[in-house]
Length: 415
Image (cartoon, rainbow, N blue to C red; front, side, top):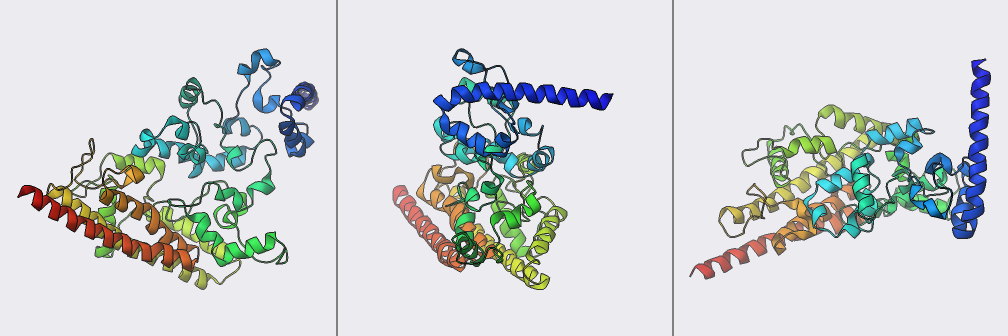
């Protein structure tokens, strides 16, 4: 009896949703024909998952457009609970909160943040609270809260599209997010692009971003080092431990006495720094396993270890640059940014840094340093050296020269 009632209930709901969809289609194929054609091409359309399933049934005419519900991941969870649960455990889900935690986010025009045209255009993939969504709507920014459609473009919501590396390129390209650059320039990326143009057989080995970072469709999306390539606990190598501590000071995570600041808790919540060896090792083991599908495990471990060593080398240069700039604060030559309580450069200011030397330091951390590391992990020689390590060495040289000039100018001013 219960089964019969469930079947009848589903049939009624399906019939109602289908009827509503027919009404929506009749209107929107005149107003927004491509939306309708995309929906018809989608698995949703082919299975008659109607508009009301995602947008609610309160909007029935031009007079009540404001009643349209804009989907969020909690809308998708009704049919895709496993994928949404994975997504919520991963780095992408934290993207919106991470952006708003950065000082630079509050220096930008809202059209770039909440308008989704700058930082917000990529970080919109992150989860937003109900209060944040309401505030965005008050400011006139009603759309862009869905998250899932960042990769599965509406209204086709194609799995095939989201599996292509170009789907990742939209956000992961250029300074600060150079993953696409280093992947496309690698043998992996080159082979996959050759497969796309059918220069290689379809069955050829050619990993995509998703092959390594979304194994078997896992939407958690993590890697061992995280986006900043910083982690706890400190390494046994004392020199490296000191360099990493200096970088954490410039991020405001450690104070001048190397003690944790309140920002450490925020870093944990936003997963900015891997906080344990276990968390790091879990992701490393997963990566070795996926690499072993094409390579020997020893080869995979060795190549990843080269990346680890490059992190150490870049930390050494980065720490040296930070110490040069920090000494200018200590000697009263540079004025500390207003509201920043620590006698260190705040490299989270990105391109909003107040002086050229601080600007160079920030671009070194988010530019040449990341190119060097990601180029090494992605096996892209051109980026690892020519746009990474070599540029980073040049950045440090410029920082030292700027510091010398600032000291000379300071002595002249005192005279």
